Image (cartoon, rainbow, N blue to C red; front, side):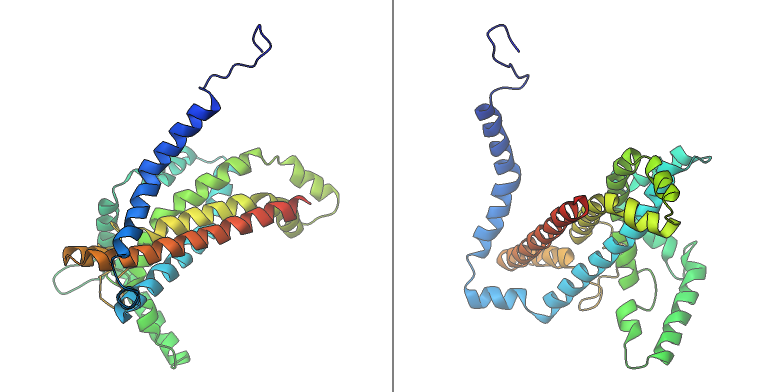
Length: 304
């Protein structure tokens, strides 16, 4: 409190601060996003529908949203385990492992794509293959062959790809790589604030490990886990740089939507590119809104 009984804030007044905030968000976020809608409005309804529903575009939607969702789910599971290990256990090299988690943040996406393609590439007649791909690709191919024999009515090779790099699995590897830090860094602060005494109290009350995990720990972690999942999903959905080096970029098979937008821009089809961008923008906003509502519900439900 000041001498005159009024509280003085470090920051300027509310009106000035709000004005700067809205102006900054408008310049950085709202104006660029509204430009996409304005550019796409130059298309007629029929042309817009034809641009966003062509078979090649729909195939890219399925791949981008499907693989992004799968990568985010995998990161939610293994990222949660990694965050738990980093917070609850002390072991040699823990600081190094904790620093490596941030590597996808700092590493240029093109470098990440080249590194992943080099590591997971299958052996060919002119190249020996990557460190992992040289022995993992034959296992992958044999597994798909066995699945095709067990369930022949499903096109397993079409869905899973015939190799790790330069096919659909490469998209999954790249999107998992870039999304992992979001889950780990979102869960770590919550785990650090979660006292081990809660687990000890649950054990003294007769709860086993599974009950302690599902009824004590998991409800506390669920809002942060949903946030990390949403961030990883959004990051994967917009990834371009690392995917183009390892996906193979085959139309109707391993071509992601951001690459298709770039392709249309290179062909000077600006309205077609912005039409696809608008669909991606609206779909991403709706999905993030649903995830935020789910996060709000989980906080209210588990706090009751």
